Length: 212
Image (cartoon, rainbow, N blue to C red; front, side, top):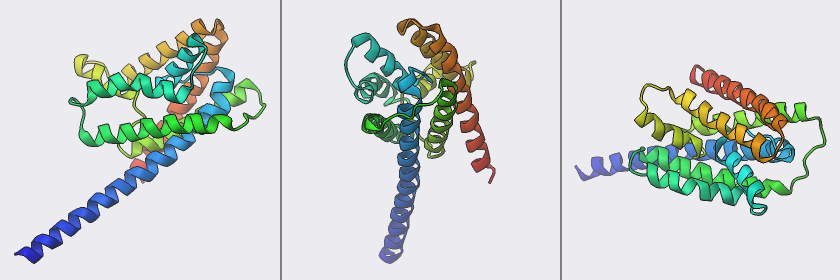
């Protein structure tokens, strides 16, 4: 029956639009919150919570030029190329949107003057906002790209390792590099605090909303 077929098509379109909307607002808001935490509290103190934005911060220090957002996009290109066939379409497109939005927001919010507070407070507030932002993006079924895609690809090869442990290992290595490149080991030690805070906030957000 053509009428029933059209009704099914309309229902499918509405469901698709609803899914895109649900993913879209979570990714956009999450990326904006993540970028605010990064620009206002972490980057001004050379604090790092890992990921491609953290690696971009290190690369900018080594190069002496460039914007973190643009460098983040460039670092993500090979990961998206590698993950194109191995990861699901919804995850890949959602993560591409997350990567592009978070990179754009990082450069956009870089013009906002950072508050002058103590480094410990910056670590806490930075970790809080980064965890809240990433948690919202993860709730949409996407990521901001970077180490999340790298961890998923690595786990396909090393199946015995948990995704969380692979991610932590990548982030800890990037944090260690921060201390080496900035020639200040205290940056590595301070960076462990926002990494821990963001992990706790992210877990609490995902757990609370999954069980609500």
